[in-house]
Length: 173
Image (cartoon, rainbow, N blue to C red; front, top):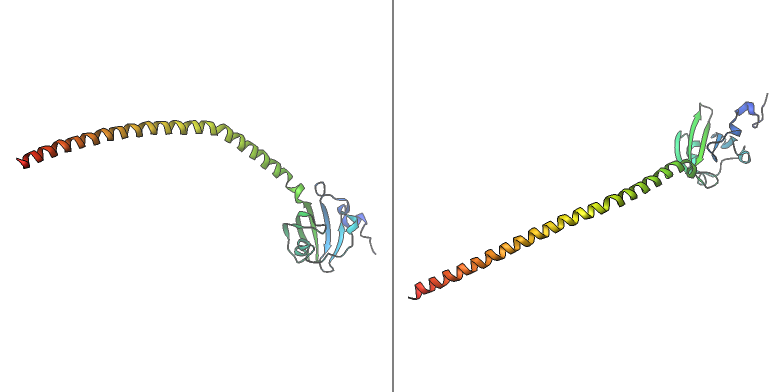
């Protein structure tokens, strides 16, 4: 017996499956380098593109199982996951454009940036005010210390002058 690739009994709902809004599922033959079943029917039973044109597909065709980010056959950056189907030489791959896959994370990141900016605007004025107060207190303390040192210096000079005059008077007599 035989079955056509588009027969839903052969691949179930893979041909109609969607991953997210714009992603897809595919069943691929790595030995014969053919896309056996895929949501995008235009690529059905097409050979794999050249290895340098679709390095992500090539990695999965060489037995890599798991998830990775790369460029698909149409030049879009995608998040793809693949798993080998036993010893058949076939693998199943699910792919989703990264713009769609990471959209929720980008939204959360933007909300975090907005919250951090708002928090900075709330914290910055009190921090500046506190720093200014400390600087003013330090200025007053430094001024008082300099005035005290100046007074001490003048007293020491006066004492030395008087002592010098007394010494000169004692020696000169």
